[in-house]
Length: 356
Ligand SMILES: Cc1cc2nc3c(=O)[nH]c(=O)nc-3n(C[C@H](O)[C@H](O)[C@H](O)COP(=O)(O)O)c2cc1C
Image 1: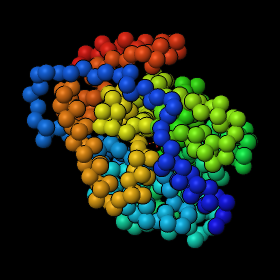
Image 2: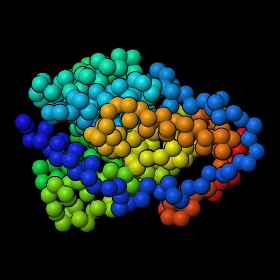
Image 3: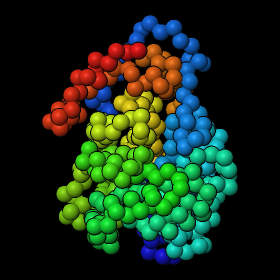
């Protein structure tokens, strides 16, 4: 097995045993406004969304996790069956191992085999050559491709990348050469206003914020091999909620699609994210943990419960569909508010939305 495939298995092992944090996502700083009078019926609450020209029953992506090492085909199969059954999207894990060694292709291709009509995203590093990015898309007939940014992880890994001087230029080349939408994705340290401004200049329209507070790759690297820098940086990154607001304040939401991810683990977190302007949300490690322990039936039950709970919360804030959510007021308190105000963002305007 290659070093890359071995590393994947190590990440996998540590990801299922290490808990989130120590950074907090910021969801506890957010409060939705209870509406005691609602004339809606739970059954009528509509959570359908369109993503990459296909209909989803719920705006959720099973985010990039795995493939490319022994035993991982089964995990991807369970996740893909869940995505098909629940009408949600799915991203595969980084396909580099399969681009280097064709034996691993089937661990990714299973995802398209079991879900021929669903929304499936390819995944490679933002540093990948555009021809490899194209091959990754073709390998699974993907509807779009995620380009992952993982500078913090690479820099704490002994064997990680050190040279990022062509990173932006490379993202621009991939965007230009590929016909499918390109999604720029962080993996748990968040996208800032400054980063998004640079990406906007390349006409990037899809962002996955991958904020801090969920899976923490610096903690995972520290568990693989202890180092002073990993210890020092264990709280590194922009919390998910702050990253989401920073980029919403930077982009025109009509021209961009934003996926909120990084510790978005409950129906309440999902609704708060959508109220803050996310178009959809991504969940990764909870799916990995479930897929390791259980069959797809249990994973499907987890998603169905999330959808039902999300509808209940929508009813409680008097929202009948997803379009109404970004108009709902939301109170931003605590550290999140302090951060935003220091960055020049007025948190009070979110609390004063008209509640249409
Ligand atoms: C075991 C594991 C492997 C991952 N592999 C990838 C990957 O190959 N490509 C990628 O873009 N993100 C990868 N991620 C990051 C997730 O897609 C996601 O951005 C991150 O885990 C934060 O979301 P979460 O808090 O819901 O887990 C991986 C995450 C885990 C736990």
